[in-house]
Structure formats: structure tokens, C-alpha cells
Image 1 (cartoon, one colour):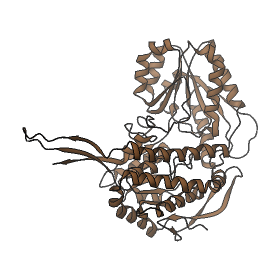
Image 2: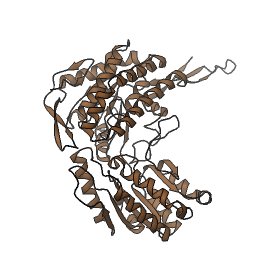
Image 3: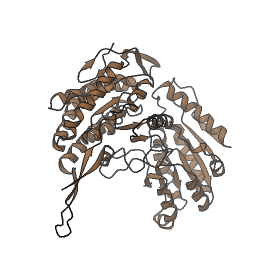
Image 4: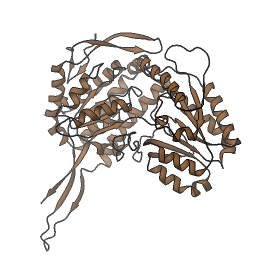
Length: 490
């Protein structure tokens, strides 16, 4: 039995226990984890509230050193994390190293940003004695304690020490993490490393807490507590919408920065298609199927010209998607939802579903392509909803007007990809502008998977992709979600 709540030290109370699941072996893991008790929840909330004043007033340089100390602690236990990460998620060791390095690089990026680029004083307007105008100093301050929900598909980069936690700590905001029940031991190891790093500074230990629960009870308590001032969430639309409803019941509204999935449409123009058929079908087949398609930026809808080149591209893409290796999904719940949604999409349109043949081990997803027409898409609002897993919907179109109608019909998306020649790019600026109103990132002649962590990245999009398209969940600009401006007038 783990004493797993991270509350300045490890707490051993809890109200009941639960276990994680090993999808590769299709069985529960032997370790048990405790759900947080009311007393433990109160300790986390009180500690975050008490620690806020001193943490918010700390210098960016001191917060930078904290982030670098977290890096050191994580590197020290990298092998332990790797073993548990793979056991709880079913993801490969290669994927672990990619995500671990991304997590480390993200911490270092913010540490450098705090030292070299982050300005707490945004601007100053000097006084004007002739006009009797005062001096104005505009500063950024932390918004207050932040509640972060761990994400199942990124046990490191979007979870305990993911982008939400890092950017909140960088802003001087204490963080309470609600660990994801699919990866409790991974979260525990990472949370313990964060707390160990804090203990080597003079920061209050309450600037970070982590609580565990396998139900929705903990989330309801935390999100409605007046001491929580902002929420970061990565997950499904239903999950994000449920949190939004809870926030709307609060006496004091607070921002919810929720990333809730996307179908990431791909628009293929005809001119350059012929000479790029093999290349594009290969890279998009991998983008659809890699790690069982469990990425928020997986391409899920393709708009393809209904000519011979377009049909050859679809044939090649389908063939290569089926030839790609199949992967175990994160959990039976996610696997069952994937299988159900494939059937639902087929029922919603007149089309052909082509999926991998043969028997696979439990929780291993059968990748699939569903081929239909743009008419089906335009007549169904639900057809564009995300299918989380190795699946793509192919829609044939004939005219530019049909593409314009499809863009108008789209809900908000994280990304859109456009495959076209330079001439087509120039001649379709009207469509590209229209598309920019629907997405947060437009990719020219490339795949949307792989979100670069850097200053200029924008990972967000209009609702329902996220709850606030003005902000990014990736890159140094994400710090602004957890700050607000105050003007000092002298």
C-alpha cells in the first residue's frame, strides 16, 4: 500500500484504495493507492493558500533555480520512472525517452525564460508634471493557487510536472495536482521528486501538493473551493465540460484552461499531390497510428480531391495505415470507447470502414480508415467529433466551394494541415484565412503531431478544442494563463 498524497511530506491516510492497470498484460497492477481523505484535501488547499503570498513575491530567478532542481531530481530517478511509466501506460521505452526528454527540456526552457526574458514589470508610463498626470507601472502577478489535472495520454509532459504545472510554478502560483488514476505510481514518483526539490530551497512546501482519487469526488471538492483561483485540464470534451459546469456554480468565477481534443483536419489540394503521393501517404500513416493514435494532434479527418491522384493517395494511405504496427491503448476504457466510436461514425455516414484484420491482444487497437463523402460531413455535426485512437475519416470533395463549406461547418480545432503547392498557397488565401478562424495552428505540407515546445508555439484553438483560444498550453507564453496585471499609480 502506498502512502501517496504529497503534502509537504507523504501522507498515509486515505479513505479507500485503488489499483492501476497494465494494458500490455491486461490486468490490474499489484500496487494499491489511497484516495485522499477530507483532512488531506484540506491540508493541500490550506498549504497552497498560505504559501501563495511568499511564492508570488519571490524573484523569477529563484523560481528558475527551483525548476532546475526539479530537473536534477527527475534525472536521478529516470530509470525508476521509466519502468513504472511503461507498466502503467503500455507505452514503449522509446516513447518514454521522447516524453521524458520533452519534460526535462520544458523545465529548462522555463528556467531560462525566467532568468533571461520574463519581465514582471510589463511597462511604465512616466509622470507628466505639466498635465498633472501620475506615473503608471504595470506589473504581472500570479493569479493564485492553481488546480492541475493529470492527463492519461501523456503521463509526464501533461501530468504531474507537465506544462500546466511548470507554467504555474514559473508564474509564482502554488499548484495542487489531481493525479490521473491510470498512472498513479508514475505520478507519485514525479510528485515526490518535485517535493524533494522544493525541500532544497527556502520555498514553503505548500507550493506543491498532489492528491489521488479514482472517482470524480475529489475534482468536485477542489474545483469548487474558493482558495483555487485557476484550473488547467487536458482530456476529453465531456471531462472539460463537466469541470466548466462546476466552475459556473462557484460564487467567484475562475478561469478554466481546458484542452479537450480535436480532429485536426487535413486539406489536400490537387496540384502537388501526384509527385508527393508516396511521401505524404507514408508520413500521415505514421501520424495516424503512432502510439495507437493517442495524441490530441492526431490527424483525424482528410479532405481529398475526387480525382485519380486523390483516390490513389487514399489507397496508399489505407494500405500503409493497415501495415503499421498496432499498439496497446492506455486503458480498457479508452480501448472500448475507441471501438465504439468507430462503429458510431460508420452509422453516421454512408461509407466504407476498412480496419486491420486478425485477432489482436486485449486493449490493442485495430487501426481503421472510414471513407465517405463531403456531403455526409456537411449533413452531420457529430461526424467531425474526435475519435481518440488510430482512426481517420476520408472525405472526397470536388470543388473549392465544397472546401469552403467544410471549413464553415468545422468546430474549433487545435490544428489544421494544408498540403499544397506554392501557387495553390497564393491562390487560396481566402480559404486559409477562413481556416485560421477555426484553428490555433496551421501546418503547411507537414503533419500536426509533434508539438514543439518553444517561445513561439501556440497550442490551443477555438471552442470546443479549448475553453479559451487566446492562450496556449505549450511554450513560454503559457505562463500568462496564470498571471494577471496590476497597475501601480504614483
